Length: 142
Image (cartoon, helix red, strand yellow):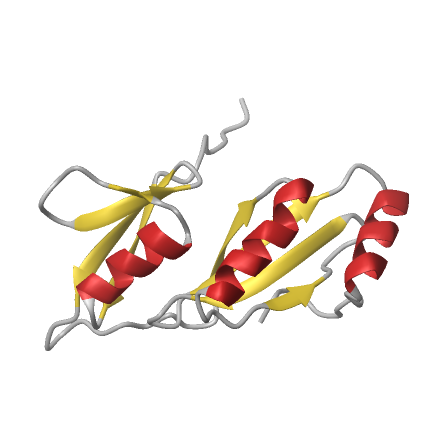
């Protein structure tokens, strides 16, 4: 019998400013606020993200890891525009023959990737060239 995970249930982050974090996730990423008092959080891409306020023992620590969410090709440019309009610095990348990504950080520095998986190398080549995205070498987005 092969075991497998079904989906990412949740992840947590420590924030230095709960109001700013809530605003970023709900207004910029259009995430759905959770209907509970504690911990504050949102649902984004079917995953719960819990927010914990920084304390003497817990501080924001985004590290080098990231969270990647799949988006549709037709949503790629609108997502980039929405992020830029909200003052978010966006980097574009290509990590495979049929993938196109945008990379950005939340206000506490947690790394995100929005990724499009395209149906063929031909479609990917056309879409990457249209946006001037060059292939990126290496194992991951950061």
